[in-house]
Amino acid sequence: MKTILSEAQLALTVKRLAHQILENNLQLADTVLIGLQPRGIYLSDRIVHELMQLLPPSQIEYGKLDITFYRDDVRKSLHIANETDIPFSIENKKVVLIDDVLYTGRTIRAALDALLAFGRPSKVSLCVLIDRRFSRELPIQPDYAGKAIDTIITQKVKVCWKERDQVDEVVLL
Amino acid sequence: MKLSTKHLLGIKDLNRDDIQLILSTAAQFKEVLQRPVKKVPSLRDVTIVNLFYENSTRTRMSFELAERRLSADTLNFAASSSSAAKGETLLDTVNNILSMKVDLVVMRHSASGAPHFLAQHIPAAIVNAGDGINEHPTQALLDAFSMQEKFGKLEGLKVTIVGDIMHSRVAMSNMYLLQKMGAEITIAGPPTLIPKYIQEAFNVRVEYNLQKALAWCDVANVLRIQLERQNQPLFSSLREYNLAYGISRSMLESINKEIVIMHPGPINRGVELDSDVADGPHSIILDQVENGVAVRMAVLYLLANRDQ
Image 1 (cartoon, rainbow over the protein chains, first blue to last red):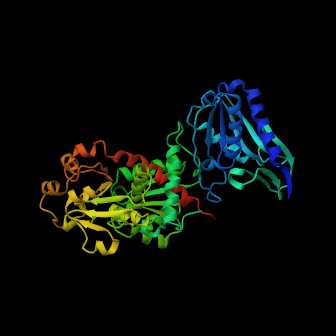
Image 2: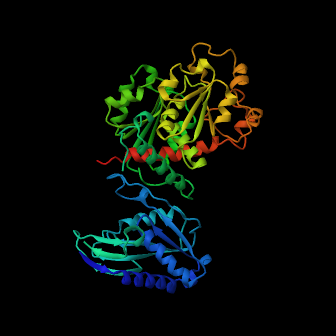
Image 3: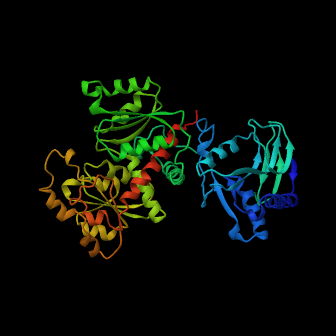
């Protein structure tokens, strides 16, 4: 087991991601944030929390998207759906999708499909905490990455959050 | 987590976890149905046949819509316009359809147990869309979903089922389901329409006085008088039935309590429900219909997605 991000590094990384998103989307004008269920939500919650220190909460539009019904392996094994909550229109908005780990890219492929059921965004960008480079199965890359790491397929990246795992850290198993 | 059964033949075969899984999945599908694009690609490689050996409006359309919203391919079969009228047996018909590579069968039949018979002879998963006077599981699931949506929980909820219990598969499925989920049930109706041993069989209360039964409950699920299944007169006239067991506005006002009114449809207006009750503020009849699509999507999704 190897630590990729410690608690302090994780907090700093989340802060940096929030600032980078804000830099590219001034005042978050016409921008919405969407966390991916189930595990991306922990990251998106933290990013939104950081943004609230920088902007009035009324300027932040934040939703949650579950992609279960759009998965390409949906018939191989049963996946249980989580809540989707997008209480605003994404039509002509700049959407920032937020997930914890970018690996094969298949989740993001499904997320793009799912997103289009809600309207036609003017732009979609991707924010992830960990980018597992060189393991992509689809041509998908992040716009904001907390940390890029090189891994082999037998390795597993575990992202732990205090809310669920009693500790904030990212480890390689 | 997955369903404990391969088919949905009846609520009788489900356990509490199955019911909860179906209801929570249905809640997610209900959200899907509020989106601008109300369709997901989950079952795009699945073909489903709707075998209707008995007439249906709501259930057939609801299943068909659920299938299409899941991107499944659908085939429709109505016994009246098919070779069943020429004498082909049920098993032959189904085997012929299955040889065209159909994955799931949704079936309604006037004979109780028809889907159970089929389940023993074919490999495809079967969803019972109502069999004779036995069960109508998706109706009970959508009723439960609607009650849960309205009250937040089923545990401890007081439900009165009113009317033709004897001939009602909806009542049967509802009793199994509500009992499994910890709701309390009272059966109300004329003695001729209530099976004699129901109290022992289901551990329910039986109340022949409608007003008392309504004053007790949070929800009244009012059933249709099934004249087509009654081969002997069980009450003297529809008017008499309406006077004794029809729910009117004045009766609801007299119990001094707000209760929710449900009905599986089709309504015999002026028989079991007066129009001002069916269309009144406490009726959630049309919500039931809306929820039916989400619940059926959940059932089809969960049955089609069996781990191979």
